[in-house]
Image 1 (cartoon, rainbow, N blue to C red):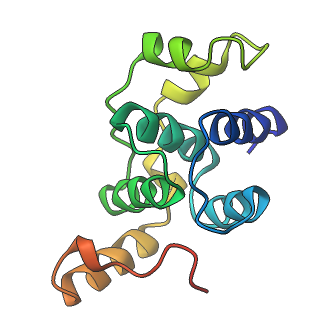
Image 2 (cartoon, rainbow, N blue to C red; image 1 turned 60 degrees about the horizontal axis):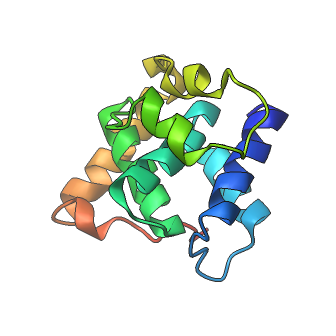
Length: 134
């Protein structure tokens, strides 16, 4: 993830007082960036804000579901991004970076199928492994 997107993601999580569930901000970002395409992470934070879910576990859940689908499916638009990020960022191109279509190849197919198999074997998506268990 580019430095500006990491900084922007950190700013959003901090400004909106996300419940980090005892983890450090940098620790969460490292875990997410190790599992998901960079553009997805900030988009998932915006999606969690849009859904009114201000927890790291919500962001993790959104990322997990997007990985199962092989692509992000967000419900927010440019206007929402502009409203929630007003005064937080100095670079105007942030919304286009977040809403840019993400190439399906950014998530390895094997990872998508492994997650889907794990979810199926456990009786559904609601029982996927803890987001930060390693």
